[in-house]
Length: 250
Ligand code: SAH
Image (cartoon, rainbow, N blue to C red; front, side, top):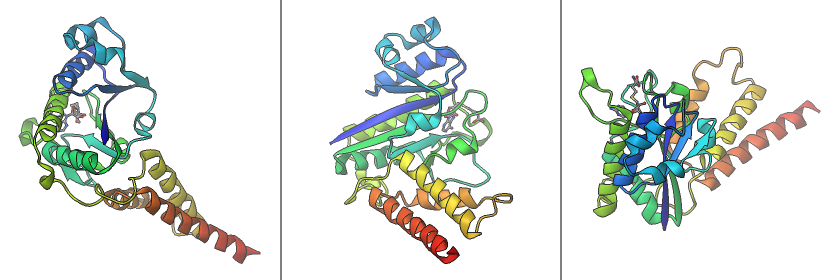
């Protein structure tokens, strides 16, 4: 049983913060740092703030897109202090840590990503919608935004506490203890594209006026945490619809 937990930082502007994140991670036993388009990396400032967690910086991966960073992950959490117009399934860090702990105990390998946003404007809705859960640190309403390294510290601390004590009874039980592995993020994305193109073909979805159809469908399916077999069933159904349309046209 092995849980791989990635900390993903999107477009971090201040390199000192990257170092602060590395230090927070190392304190709590996390090692896998992924940087999506950092403004400047590597940098002396990051190393200075890492204060001995240079190994985390040395092995950090730099990628161009969030999709690349989370492609193989099965549980993807987006952190944000802000409520959204279309709310996403929300958890606090303790519930998140319990869910990760359950997934780690029941699957041979589980792959988790926790995504953090830009210092000035956080994560976009599109980025949030690539993730299954929105994790919010319950800070006070009128001063809710933590420094990114402080936010990573809180999240990493809860993961550490969950790993040293047994709090799995606090976790949602659906989806994580299961007979088939959870679908990976890129498999979900391919399925959403498949849904979109098929629903355009049937005429259900008007590409010139899609409204929130894909966002709401995405939220519905993400909420269910589909496994690999379920994704294949849904895609098989879509393929059968496309075949049926083609045969009717003959
Ligand atoms: N002004 C930005 C705040 C960004 S703070 C905004 O409007 O979103 C930088 C990052 O730290 C956030 O993107 C998020 O990943 C994390 N963060 C800060 N405060 C948080 C909180 N209360 N809950 C969860 N994540 C938080």
